[in-house]
Structures are given as C-alpha cells and as structure tokens.
Image (tube, rainbow, N blue to C red; front, top):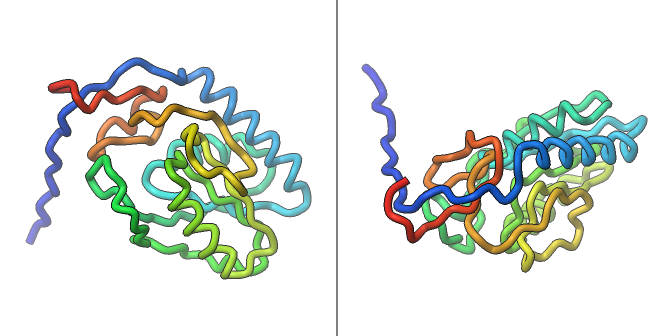
Length: 187
C-alpha cells in the first residue's frame, strides 16, 4: 500500500533579479550569530524556527552562534499555497520541547505584516520562558517590527523567493533572495 506524492502545479510567474546575494546573506547571518553569542553567554538559547521558510536561515544561524544551542520547530500557516495571507494563523506543528524557564529565540524567515510573529510571541510568552526574543532575516518595510531584536534586512513589499522563501513550495533552494514576478508567464 503506497502513498501517492502530492503534486503541486508550478505557479505562474518567474524568478527575477537577486536583491540580496549569497555573500550578503552569509555576512549578515554571521553578524546576527555574533550578536546572539554575545547576548546569551551563560544561558544557551533554544532556537524556535518557523517552518518551512526559516529552515535555511536557522540552519546557518545555529552554526554562526558560538554557544551550545538547541533547536525546535513550529509550523504555522496563514498563506497555504496562495500568495495572499488569509489573515488567520493556524498552528500545523507545535513544539516538541517544553519552553518553560528556557531562553527562547523565535527565528522567522520574513515578517510581512507582523500577524504571525505577534501571534507566536503571545503564544510562546504564555508558556513562561525565562526570556524571549525574536529574530527575522527579512522584514518588510511596512511591517510592525516592535519586539524583533535581531533583524537581517529590510525589504520591499514585493513577493520574494530563495534562501528558504517560496511561492507554491518552489524556489526555497536558491542561494540568494530574489524578487518574484507574479505577472510573468512561466518560470
């Protein structure tokens, strides 16, 4: 009895120019890792990554932190396979780790409106960690950023792909962050 693989249809559109190159990403991730290392001496953090987009960034970030770190993941959805947020955050996978009395750093790939990060911050703070901070690789220019301690780059409100970011589950593997042209035909 086999399971059939879910098929996704390539979204219309095309990958555009890189707005943040692989070298820029590497340098900024190393700098954030150094900041976290300095801030968390004597209190190793638990990095909580938001799947799926943050997995590439969090992997590189964990290696850039010169401390023992633990890692866990949450999966949430407000987009599904769409390029438009539903405005409702759903938890698809919760943490496996008890965060009470732990030093938590929530790691996001991109903050669009701030809805997801606000929801997750409230949820995780209610679980009574010893400390709680947020880290986002990318923050949209018009997003709410209160409470995000570690920020990689400010980006335009365009759709972006690469370095973990996707459209319709595609393009996460690109080593740079690219604009995505939803209007172009084919990819």
